[in-house]
Image (cartoon, rainbow, N blue to C red; front, side, top):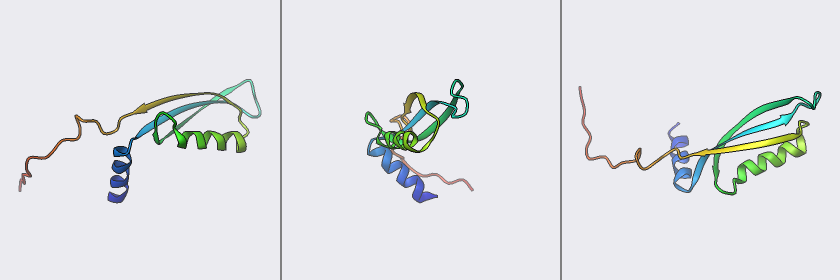
Amino acid sequence: MTGTVDRTFEMQVKGYRLATAEIIYHLPDYPDLLQKFIWQHLDVAPHYPRLKRFLDYWEKNIEGRLHSVHLARAEIVSPAEARAVDGVFRLH
């Protein structure tokens, strides 16, 4: 688990942020009905290459035609959360 946490932190330092996309698509059997799919991953703004690869895959391999995509991103580590430690205290 520690390796995953270290890798995630390293990616954030390199500019990756949590990107959440709300993907609205037409149901294949009922094209007048819309369905919602939530995609969430670490990605790099403003180009979002990982999201673009996912949407390209969707258009080529999934029957539900895309209606719209709404994107939000969040800073996972912010300056207020990352601080230097002055000391370590142990309680027995």
